[in-house]
Length: 302
Image (cartoon, rainbow, N blue to C red):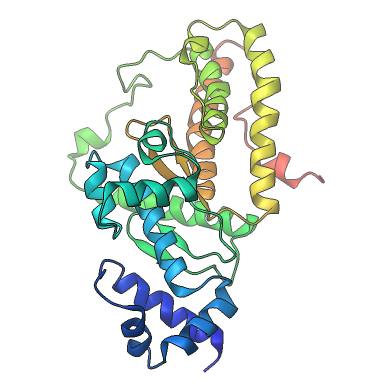
């Protein structure tokens, strides 16, 4: 059996028995019908690190995820990660993340620990081998189209629960508690990029800048936040990291997202806000932008 296939089996076994801390390295090898020596040699050759080191790293990544998504005491997180004492867990965590667990919990950083292979803890509770087929720009676009078709079908399905009167009732634009204006929508379009730029840089976002923001201030912010956000997206696509995860410490509690999911989120909600702005501008006699349809833009040469 090729070493890569053996490694894939090892990762599958590790995912199934990640919490079996009583299982020895010899027992893990025996379950895959190898001696510990041969399994260690094959895993190290493929992964660049021995099996036990890989397992400890994944457990620490899961512990980091638990710390930002739960309020569990650190001692409970330590025990779940296989450590017999808070001190041992603190030493191991600090070596891997550069700071003590309590410090990291207050201001989390990147969830994944640098490793010579692409095997990491993947929230909420699994391991994932590096994808053989990388997500491309076209893949992302196709996923968004498929999501659109699926969501349209779901909306039609749940609309079957309504009466004809409800189905034909005019929709007011103010469907939530917030009264949107052209100003607030434009400020939020810029702020949405600024918010994610802040999340990617693990810093706070200043929401007060969006309070009755002048157009000149929006232009200045867009010049910075827009180019920064485009740079993030370009880097992620060029490095084929759309499926990588990052921690958004601005959420309460902090959450873990993929770069591809974040991009899809921004495009989806920005399209809604842009459409409202385009309609409002047309109502005021400014129709140069039409609906803001990106079709012609996409068709133009780079």
